[in-house]
Structure formats: structure tokens, C-alpha cells
Amino acid sequence: MPSPREFCAPMKRLVLALAMTVSLMMVSAAQVNGKPEIPLPNPANQFPDKASARIVISQDDQQMLIYDGAQLVRALPVSTGWPGIRKTTTPVWSGRIGEYWGSFESFGTIQDHGYWLFTDHLADGSWNGDILIHGAPYHLGPTGQKEYELDGIGQSPASNGCIRMEPADADWFTQWNPIGVPISILPFTHGTGAYPKLAFGAALVASTQTMTPTVAGVGPHP
Image (cartoon, rainbow, N blue to C red; front, side):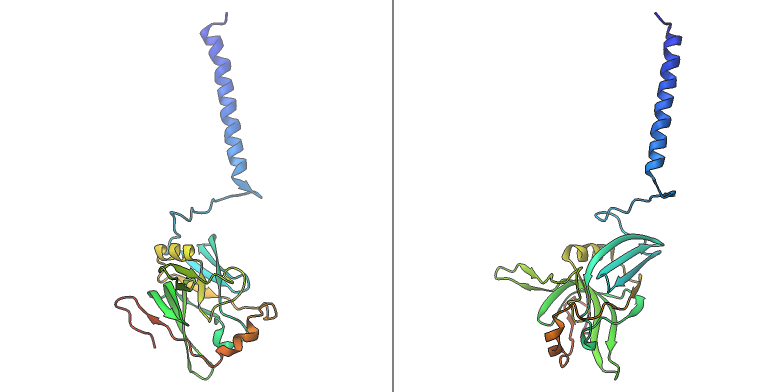
């Protein structure tokens, strides 16, 4: 029968070999093309650092890309303005997320979680409304439930110029509260042929975008 010392030595070598194997497996799993893979934050309970965050609106992809430094940490589906008609397009723009409007009404619908970006003016200088990021528009149903208009979000332009988000994403966005975070809206370059709504969107040419916030302490914007 082997002595305790003779028995323990092989066991120590086995444990050491297993530990080294596990360590190598963990290092290999954390490497992608020779670079360490950094897991994305859990969107349910983590938010980008506002001091290093930036937002890019890709109108071609209909996505909001949220970066923390150089790291893409979240991509959210959105719907921007209808292209081809200046009054309903989302202009190319760079700036910072503005004040929180909360809930407001426009075009006969209600929007929650509004964040103001800028006031849009046409080439002749006339006012064309305010551009916001906000949740999907909705009507109140017979029992007061919210009946959302989700068409186009993440797929195609469908708004009158603002940037629409899905309700759950708008909730997350407001919890993050990114006032002051830099944002860039990229141009829409895919043309207009794929969007049949433009065929009857011309009716909006004569309309004027009006938005009146209903949040306490926030007055109508000019």
C-alpha cells in the first residue's frame, strides 16, 4: 500500500494539470482573432458611462448605435422620418441630447419618453417642428390601454421627422437619462423606392409639425 506521501504527490500533479488546462481553456475562450473579447453590458441593469458615451443614428440601418468609448454596447431599432419629402425627413445633424419632454401629443397621437434634439427649419427659414427621440406613438383604447403604432421600427422610415423607439427601449433610454450625450444623425442613402408610404406622404407637404409637451414645468417650444 503506498504511503500518504507517495499517494499525495501524484494527486497534486493531477490537480495542477487540471488547473492549468482550465486556465488555458478560459484564455482561449476569451480570445477572438487574437484579441480579448469583452462581453457587452447587461441591458437590463447596466448603462453606458455618460462621460464617454456617444450615440449614432444610422438611417440606412434604422438603428440607434450606442457606444461607450470605442465599444459598441447597444444597438436599438428605430424608425426615422420618411425620405423624399423634406417636411418629413430626419435631417442630418450632430449635437447633444437635449431636455426631457416626457409625454407629448403630435399628429393626433401620444408619445412618451421624449428627448428634444433640435428645432428644424426649412431652406426658406420657416419652422418645421422639433426633432425628438421618443417612444412609439399610440392611441388610448376603450379601456385606456396604449395601442402602439410599431410599423417600421427597425425596418423602414415611418415617422414625420422624429426618431421613434420601441416602448421597452424607450423605457430603458429614459432610465439611462442621456441628457448631454453627443449624438450624430447620419444621412439616409438608400433612396425612396422601397417605401410605398411615400406615394401618399405628399399630403403632409402642406402640414406643419406641432408638438406640445404635457410635462409639468415644460412649456411649448417655438
